[in-house]
Length: 463
Ligand code: B12
Image 1 (cartoon, rainbow, N blue to C red):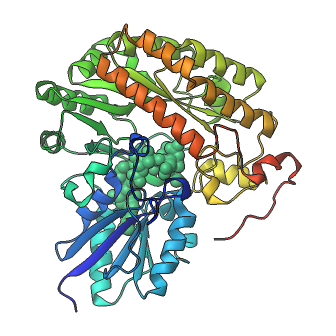
Image 2: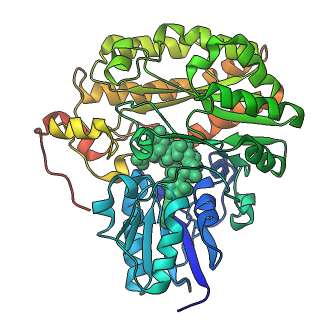
Image 3: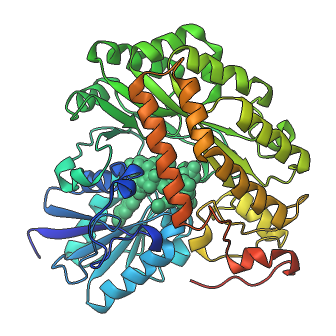
């Protein structure tokens, strides 16, 4: 039995974002969207003491297929699954043991196991130690699905990443999971609606040790437990840091809480507005979002110098032409500082995937198209072409030069120059990403273009 094991953790990247031997030097534009990856750091942190970890993020460096690792761990979401399976095959051909983890393998374990030796279903914290022990003993099982009843005690070693390659190296997670059950959401499916918090003192200690003044919370909704969030923010006030996080829109109901957020260093939030149509929100089991308060919510953030990036989804069954028009109007008038506009995507493992599959409406199961920018199912009330053209058109309008300049002129009134710079950087990053993925031109997958002609229940490619 080996006393020490070498564990190579690989984060595969889809083609447009991949670093190959020929394309080695990352440009500034490539870095704009790349903030440090907490996922592989957290996996490495879960490894037992007898394991030496190395991380390769394929968007930063080419994958070393001839590595001398004993075990290769692939971490991927749905969109990266085809590339992960390609790498798994290459590693297995070289005699390596391959373990798979992350959102996609956790939600599609039976598919994933066909490409590797073992699948971690859920978090690495509880599963990686037994996986490594079993591998050492020569008795690796196919599936590991233990859940962790406590979140904490993890110490990440940031030196494992090439920090210079990322725009923001400092990322932290204070809570994980989500209690809600929105129909389209992978996070609810992955966490099985469990929500956990890390001890506040531990989070603050980690933040204290971070480089620079600015950092990002990787939580799904940092304010999901207001009492916990209040304690965390109070602890952050004296630290004089600047931070960004994803939060629910409901947080704007409480002015005192918002003031505390600002004082604790909050300078930007990512908010899942999801839809301008209340019927669509209700249909997706996200009734707790009220579309009529969005504009006021943005104003309340801005009043406190907090920038807002909004996430909006198009293509819900209740969406009509009127919804598209209302969305366009909102984007022109509401004053968002950045936008993530996506097409509804039935991510595997979600209730939405199950429903649309049962209705025979999913026509494209090429996981590479599950980047939220391709249409992969037949919409209920809109034509596929209407939906994809509006999606691309609204993104082009929002990130056009005149719109970016207009935003900068308005932001002068409520944002500090640093946050304005950041908003500009996000704008540039989005322009670059949209061009690279073909969305700027509205290039879609062949399947999406032909979607109106595709009969229900068409067979999916098998992985
Ligand atoms: C940061 C982030 C990104 C970053 C970096 C991704 C990364 N790999 O770190 C960026 C901005 C690049 C990104 C992009 C996208 N993302 Co993203 N992203 C996230 C986010 C917000 C946080 C990820 C994170 O750091 N989590 C914290 C870590 C600690 O948790 P974890 O990743 O789950 O890892 C744990 C387990 O999964 C497990 N595990 C993971 N890997 C492995 C590997 C092994 C071997 C083992 C044993 C265990 C294991 O152990 C870990 C520790 O416990 C999540 C939402 C979320 N809360 O997770 C979405 C999320 C992962 N993203 C998602 C999506 C869809 C995307 C995009 C495809 C589309 C988009 N527009 O957002 C793009 C892809 C573009 C691209 N270029 O790759 C979806 C994935 C859904 C799915 N089923 O695939 C999520 C869940 C968001 C959502 N709302 O649905 N994303």
